[in-house]
Length: 362
Ligand SMILES: Nc1nc2c(ncn2[C@@H]2O[C@H](COP(=O)(O)OP(=O)(O)O)[C@@H](O)[C@H]2O)c(=O)[nH]1
Ligand SMILES: [Mg+2]
Image (cartoon, rainbow, N blue to C red):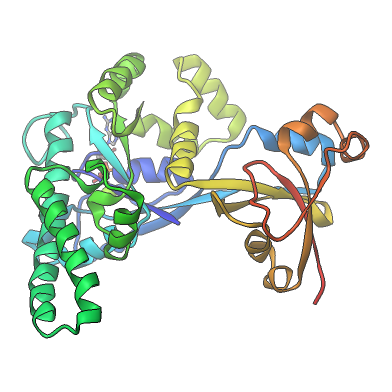
């Protein structure tokens, strides 16, 4: 599961990538030889410190989300004949994080000459729609040929796909991204193999200049109501990157001195996680408290397979206590006494926050 960071050159993508992943990728202009940066962010989870208090583990391992950051945009790549590479970067991502520049800095000229967040948001949607349309048109041409020679049995599925693609195409031509076309789950499933960028969930980060940081939450509110289809977070990329490179205590002091909320980056990571439809469950074996990431709706044996393939193959049952039950009991023993430690079988769907012990036999 990974999130691709996109946005206008100079909007602060690499800066924010560094802040999220505590990385030190070079903040620099586009170069065709530059490989994408990839890194992981630890998912902040208020439940971990509570569970540490209960289990006293030797080690705690939080969940992670992966981010990739690539220099350039569809436009710049298109011009340099690298459109394919950029497109594959987008199609392989599970969600997009768009950095929207709102900071003004004459040392960093905007490619369009002016700062205009709404224009930049619209132009990304347009670029992506154009690229989705090109794929749809190619597929429709192919479908037409296939339909001519199709057997009666194949005909139905081809026509169904053709109808759906025509419908999606008409909407894209009206500049409505696939994620906003109100398609049914079944229709989205039919489209999923194409991995269309405009179908992917998108998170918008408003990169606010350091001198306007006090207006961040107001700006965030305004843009959230203008774009109800996106989760929007406003933060100052430059400050966040600098703070991410300090020790925790030092960063906290600076934040307090500057009146910055600690939550902005955490919210971005948290939103990324939920945008991807991911949930966490916890294991506590071998004095290690560990958060595991699974898609919502995962059955227990599949979740066990995350921990070890043997656990999935030899799955017998799971002992489960929900986070809030455990929190209110204060210990597993008390949860057991109150009947809140449950035994679940292979059809059990793991819930966000479950503390799980898998029993298996191979
Ligand atoms: N003043 C200011 N400059 C920023 C901010 N975020 C990024 N920059 C600067 O903008 C330039 C481009 O940033 P970068 O992260 O490389 O943008 P990218 O091209 O989108 O990856 C760098 O010189 C950054 O230091 C910000 O919040 N305020
Ligand atoms: Mg960059």
